[in-house]
Length: 325
Image 1 (tube, rainbow, N blue to C red):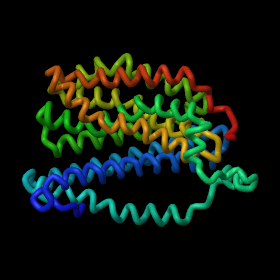
Image 2 (image 1 turned 180 degrees about the horizontal axis):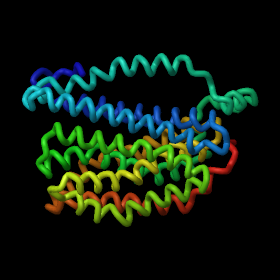
Image 3 (image 1 turned 90 degrees about the vertical axis):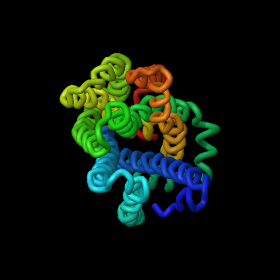
């Protein structure tokens, strides 16, 4: 929010912005892994999916809040002033939220699972090294499952804004408001999918989400290229459904695939590996449109990553009914 601009430090300004945003994304991956482990380790064995889905609800609430702030800024601040200084405001507004989050974390106690591991002297000094050497299989599985997860996330929450404002010629205010409302509408789906995974298993819910992407991503992108706001909303909501399912179940299964002593580190490393792919989604989606001159081209990116994640899912055991080791 206080980064010097190009006029002051030249090309170092965009480079520093890129570096800071990358660190921010890595931190978000760590937060997601930690929150998932915390929720899963506190949950009753038969309700881990529901409890883990609370993390997904928090993710979309934060995304919705971000869209809301962007919408308010777009409606209140002229485009020229937004480019000059307005873009800094949302970053600065995150400061009090960070303070609140820090206070909460300093008051948290260790989970029962971690306390038991500590009592048995199973807490390791270098969990990251142990993950790479002994738990590389679940690490690769988390990375493979997460490819479609993150591409769907960045597509639904990042690229769509550019799609609406740049290609469909809607105002930035409309694009921010519209995306925020659709994201909010998807929040109730998350605990439903989390509860469903407790009943029928994580693999079935994730598999259905990947299959949805495979079958409907392309036709839904065709439907989004329309002048009808109603059809646009329906198509956007429909393409967002598998993302809410993966957000509900992924946070839980990523934690369940690792034993307690490396759960946080293993999930965090896996999440940040696939985040490298997902973070490039808006750019790859835009590039695909520029190269093909086809507004539906980004759907092929979703389909390709869904294939990778679906193949990975075949190698993953069902964790929903297994005790946490």
